[in-house]
Length: 455
Ligand code: PHE
Image (cartoon, rainbow, N blue to C red; front, side):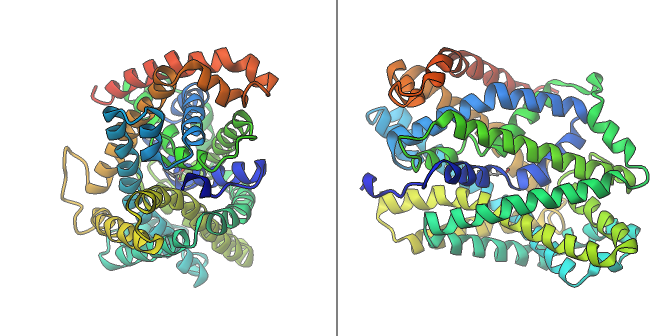
């Protein structure tokens, strides 16, 4: 059965598909508000270092697990450990985590759909900048629209997944990423020229080390894993589609760097607008949705047509980028159900729609009618996000690196990393990468995990 798994065609296709999974709301929506909540430039510095030193080795480890086992993320551990009960159990986490993330990811996807619809009706161009920044509050706290939009977004996602790996995923990422990239640059250029924007640029460039707390590390690590789709089986599943000839160092490195670039650019597109509009940087999940209409409203006052076109394309690109990411979340569960229980692809997609749709509704409502429901001081949405990003992703990523660093024989890891010794550069780098995977990354992740519980 394993040999029937589809393969990506060529290096660019691999990078694009992985980058399609990595680049999404994590970069554009989550990164800026994490920066705002956790101390600006200091967070950015920690984030970049963590990505290169810890996340990249984890990424490599996950690709190796996927490619070596050539199966879905749950069975990958079981197969490579020769059905060891602990690793069989651990594999289930890689199904649980993406499914949990898909629940609330889809809510933000839904917000993007609503903003897209609004920008098509030219709403932002007509609003005053003040109205534009306030728009988010009344929308997110309402009952029906966020729920309906979440279900619409999830429904489209599931339909795409039902269509199969190649046709669904590859086509999407090829178009959406370059478009998004250009649009972010356009918005960035405009955003930094707004009156008062300089403060936002300074906020991103001048670290205030006094802002660094142990929790900064926990959230930066969580953000980095989240943004690279690590610690949840997505990259393992993608790895299983990567052909044996591919150099996983270049594909993984390419993905990590483009993901970083998108996040940083998004930061520079959003933060100056946040400061120009007088929004609190620590405003939380609504940050981009509060600040970006302000940009379009301001732009619209001088350049109405340009502003409308940029707004429409921007939200469309965000929707597609979000979709290429959530597709990889849903794909994990679907491929598991299909390969394990022989369920049809369509039925597996429906199962995921029901589960994620249901929990997602609770998350969507936690910005409005259920805002008062707090668990451990967090709303339902924040709780989902915290448990996934700060706890489960770290646990799973740790298991992946321990698996590659300590369970798989060194010879196998070397063989995967160097394609059987045929890649001289990888051959030379192997000791460093192996050391990072075996020692540096696991120790760092363990320490960071516990800082979550420090004040
Ligand atoms: N990495 C994606 C993003 O940045 C989110 C994601 C998380 C995708 C987990 C797949 C798995 O938006």
